[in-house]
Image 1 (cartoon, rainbow, N blue to C red):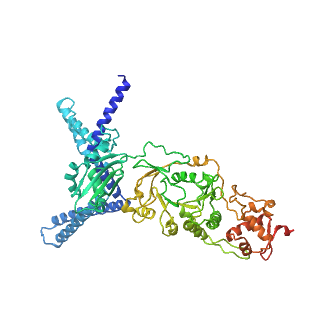
Image 2: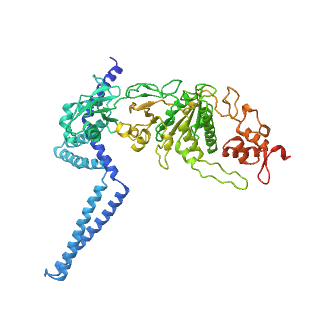
Image 3: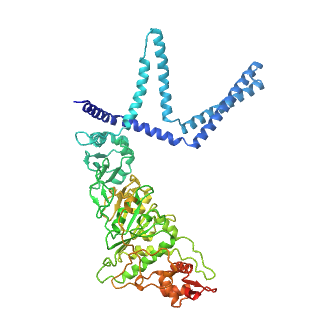
Length: 637
């Protein structure tokens, strides 16, 4: 055996021994950490100020008490009559000073209790109590004996070493697998779930009347079934989660689930010590890849296209990374198109090569107007006996992704600037939410599907989802959320009872998906898709609506030019490529002179008409007379 093999064997043996000792020290380390955390939480600036004030008061009262004692002693020396006025006054003052000092001392004790020293400082003080005398004793004994006497110092150093080693071992996370396939941590938890340990110790934790079954190891961790007597229900047992965790000595960050069992008098404890998704590569995306993997069953989780969906997750939970695979799938096939509404711009710019993007308030209003018009046109084509229109390359399924719904709601609440002196003013921005609400309620049959994403899934004045839109959502996904209230908004009022605790999910990249009454609240490891991966995807056609379409042609699959020139804007384009700008220009050529005339002739939203008029006027294609009438630019000459 060479030195490498010997070193490996020694290392393995050492780790095994340390892993076996770690569970024995875990209660000590857990108690230490709880006490340290309690002291840290109490060391607030307010309590510090109170302690300093109490110290000043105590010092002052102590000085007063000393002064009163000296005055009383002086009065005694000055007069032998104990009933003299001087001695009575000095005695009364001394008694009052002592009472004040006693009260100040009690106040100082209370202030010190409210602002305790750190546990590390207390440990140093405690060890100094024996370290200093033992060092002095070693020195004196060595001098007296004429030799070196170290045992007092060795004992003191050993006590300090035991303290440090106990903390280190108690905080150690055992990882070596033992013969039964369990880690050391799992074996310790399984031993505490065994009835032989649970029953004798349950009463001390207020859990008498409950009996566990031996834990079983699954791909997702340990599972134990609990029998409950007549005093318990699964709900009341679930409320004792803190006591159960303490009885098991489980880590505070270990996910523990307590659910109803197979019968009314049964409950189930699941400790997520493992994940069935471990070892599965969820980076990148190719067409047909699952959205994620169920960490309990190990099964792939698919999110079919064509489902209205809510995706919620706090900042840093991985919401953007987890949704990109869905958007890539929604823009990949020839009969699918993607629209991204993103007021923050960050996500939308990654999809410009394969999605219609709307960033500014004008863009959002325009694209939502077009989507509603497209919806009404498609609904008229739904054949009898069908629930939805049949998608094709001519009329593809359109997935509308709203990234950060709270910003869109705020955008729609912007106050409208009124026009004057012939100026049309700004459009009614509230039409944005009306359009999106209409799409949520009616557009599924037209194969226009809304996906709403938000960081703050509440429905109050500052929330991130509109109640009318939320009511139409069929697929609800959440990564880590902030509160249990947000979990109820996403998953329903029964979220807490049914185990949909998204506020307890780890970050990032772990989600829950509720897709129907039979869905299980299992954590899902979602696919990670970076912005660089999105940009590397091949280009795809961009959706734009056209008012006049040739037979069999429903889409113009190129982007509009962003900067029109007078040559292209001064004459109406052919009907097959007609844009909103062309329609406005043609309406003026046909005799429309005001904003209302153009709106009536074209059916375009007033805000869009106003924008196109400004652009056409700036390029010289149109001109305004002194009374605000619109004329073609050719008549300016």
